[in-house]
Image 1 (cartoon, rainbow, N blue to C red):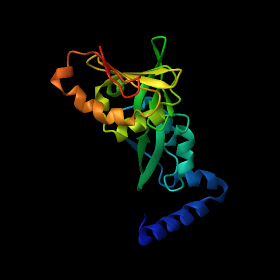
Image 2: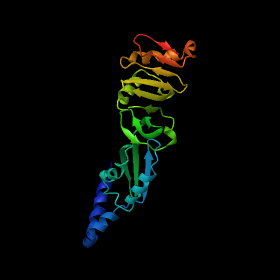
Image 3: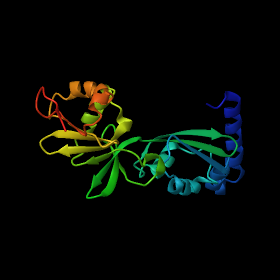
Length: 223
């Protein structure tokens, strides 16, 4: 928010510069507080090299007349961006905070990664980055993943321990843990199982089993 005294001072400069040479009004607009420095901050760790390169085009344009939609037009094509915040620091600095979508899993088809998936089911084109290299992998149909993942969170299941999710066309999921234990869930009413399975995994009596099969109602088959 610009203080009133500064605002009126800016208006004064605008009037002076815009009337100095009426034949070059457009050029004068550009010359009012030209952007010399662009500071970009981000909420995650996606590579912003391309965005930074495109935003360089804003340099030497007017900081005073810069509109947010001019920047959103540049970054809207980057699907990992969820929003931006601008801060103008007069006389010549533009600060941009880029908020990014947070992926919770990656999609794998025939051994190749195609995109990240957020908790809400939004797809983000896959770009290899170290911070997300250990995300669990979704193998199979991902369309029902958002609903399933939210149930996992509600149950306080330790998601960081998950290596992969396997979806089967009959409408059920397997969970593969990082210690190679597989949890086979039924198609419905698996929420209660998710609440119980965590404590079960911490019981040493079950440590020798690699498959916990809950597919048959009211039964647990250990292998």
